[in-house]
Length: 189
Image (cartoon, rainbow, N blue to C red; front, side, top):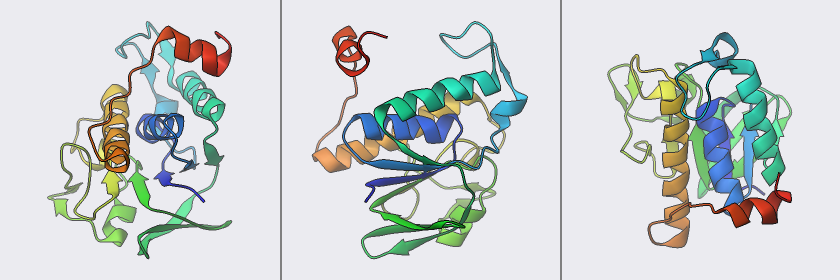
């Protein structure tokens, strides 16, 4: 069983999945591959001089796959609260976990279906990206009227993940890698 369900496979969703999985929370991503990144070319993303958005996504996917994230290339048809967590429904079945991260760009339908509060047209969240529903998070274009930018979305995903990790640890969680971490995990790649 997963600890975290992430709906969306763009920068926000994959960033959240990367942080949670690499820090010990089993994470499942549902990626319908409908992200705006396929129309983008990155010139202003820190650390990337120039890269096609689709190529960037492949790098992100390889990274989360390397950590063992369970990734499903399917559309989510529903989300709901279930017991002490959440249930995500796809054409392939149902998945449950205590935490939910919604990262579906400007499509806010699942947040609306879940009953999240809105501020105008956007999902209302705290600074840690938590919605009005405990342990449900919304990120990226879902929470910003027109500030749609890959690095902002990735940061939103990271903020959601760090809040989840802080809840699990019972104190502020810090994710800080060192060169030795890379050697231990990937043999120095």
